Amino acid sequence: MKQNIDVVVSEVGPRDGLQSIKTIFPTEAKLEWIRVEAAAGVPKIQVGSFVPPKLLPQLADTAAVVAGVKKLKGLTVSVLVPNLKGAELGLAAGADEIGVVMSVSEAHNQSNVRRSVQESLDDFERIVAYRNEHDPERSTKISGGMATSFGCTISGKVQVSDVMRLAENLIARGAERLNVADTVGYANPKQVEDLFRELFRTIGEDIQVGAHFHDTRGLGLANVYAALAAGVREFDACLGGLGGCPYAPGATGNIVTEDLVFMLESMGLRTGIDLDGLLEAREILERHLKGEPTHGTYVTAGSPKDFIPASAA
Ligand SMILES: [Zn+2]
Image (cartoon, rainbow, N blue to C red; front, side):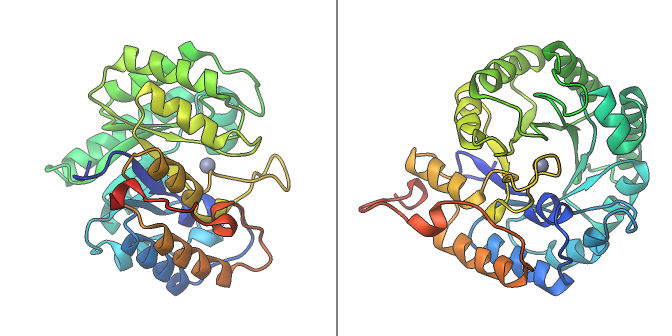
């Protein structure tokens, strides 16, 4: 973690946000968005995903986007991949972090990446081996995704023991980080705190753990608070809450970056991010959206009187 930062806010809008809407952003618009958001102090941005362009035409330019922003000072550039092929492309592009998509729920994994969880784990092992061979200094980190950790739209309840087993299996195969995701917005704060406490008991405190919440049912920031209490210090978010939820039309998507930053900064936790800079980036985003809804409350309400962000104190 960078010095002077208590909590890492990781922007995932250029991937999670754009992949769930119809608008296709020109590469230049993505680059402008990412540059302005990085300049606002966002330390990590997931800029795209290496999946077949036929599946996600919105993200077909991911290699060009990585190339366009990888020199930005202080920015960790991350990408998402579903398999070894994607990881090869991510390494070739020069991403700093590769997140591998996988679900705790067997049914969700089948529907999302068309293979069993065990097959995804086998592939994860090959990805780490490939990275070790082609990047012996391990400058590109491999993160294990854990989608549907709090519930699944297909199979409903997800057992905590299954979440723990996947976490242990990922670490055993060389994961340098875990990303625990409430992919479908089912989590509640009590569940979140309990699960992360159990996770740290199971895997120890040494491995980096990020949390990914959706605000589908309005509990996104409450879940962040619960995860903070359990010791999580890295959160994914989307500028303007971009993305929505494919399972709940009209619902909000990922938690809103600017609202999250406001919450953390007002709690005395330094993110290193400037809120005005974020709103500037949001304007770029909105300029290119074609009728897609954006979300969030900080953009309309602004800061309270006499508010001093922790990062500015
Ligand atoms: Zn998401």
